[in-house]
Image (cartoon, rainbow, N blue to C red):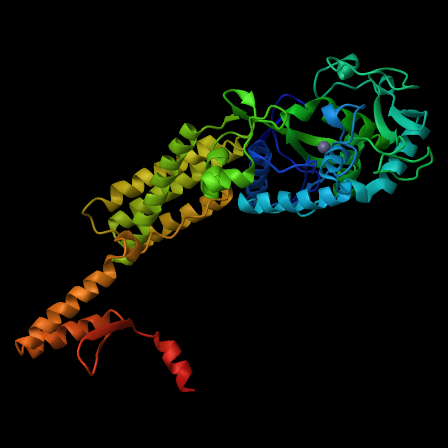
Length: 497
Ligand code: ZN
């Protein structure tokens, strides 16, 4: 039974979806105005593992992650510049040109980190009519009002405000020194629709004049459009609990009169020396730079092996530790591959011991994941399996193929939940650093010495045994011997037809 920690109830709850067998999940996506950095990798990988596990459990999952290409203002507040317009002006490009470029970067980063793409990646700018419609519904129901071309949500009209974050309405503007917009009745009220000032490029006609949407309403509109008025999981960074998600709940539930989301899941942050990795602090590394420095599978394994709710420190030392850990798992997988390839019985008493160890590790992995996606516990189960494999494969007992194959399949199955694929072992040629051609030449020289002393039997034996390995020796008319790799049989046959 899957249990998840719900920020709304502040406890673990049994996961029961709205529609049996189906899960709708919405995760706040990027504001596309700059290169994604490793701080963004945490929610991407955390929710990727969650979605993979839900699918592993047999649910049909619709995973929606929006793209904010308008309306996200600097400081996440109601006043200030649009993040995309501001950066576009600096770069001297159209705002939507900038958005287009960074949307491509976003998908590149998801792919690079091995994240399954969302089923839907709706863009805010493509949902302006629905946003205007929701503003109108909220005005009609007395939860919002127009003032000077903008529309604000009346926080006092929604008594449950604060139920997610535990914060009071007056905290809305706390710590943010901004002038209250003209006509705003209360500093706690937040913008649903903003009047476009002269020179503002991202603008659309509306019943209140030309303007653009507020940031919070985008997520309400896009999540409910694709997942229904009440859906299963809303995810996002812990920094968005207030005000972003609190405001989403207020406006959505005020508009529909129904509960908005069953389970709120929040991921912790990536930190550097205990401080949040962020663009504004300058302590970030872009995902493009990170994958030049570390293998993408290592970055993924490192973040996936930490609990999604915990904050994850990012440092060279920690990644080195993680690299050694991943190497230990990979070695166990290679040891299995080697043992499977070697001659041995199909079944033996050791075979069922290996199969039992694999099954036990799988059950521990699943029990950990069922406990609020406890990936550290799940990874620990993989290490137990790796230790068992090492114990068996380093022993002298004859290992049954059946058990070995079962353990290998469990590694693939559980690795798949974490999004880890096990690499192929390095080929012997690579391992010897190009030694193979030198060894072939050595054999050619030994064969020539045999020929010189008329030892034809040895010379022929060397040639024939090399041929068995797929290496053809060719004696040249004017002396000397060259070698080449034999063509695969199928290709030789192809050429004859
Ligand atoms: Zn959002």
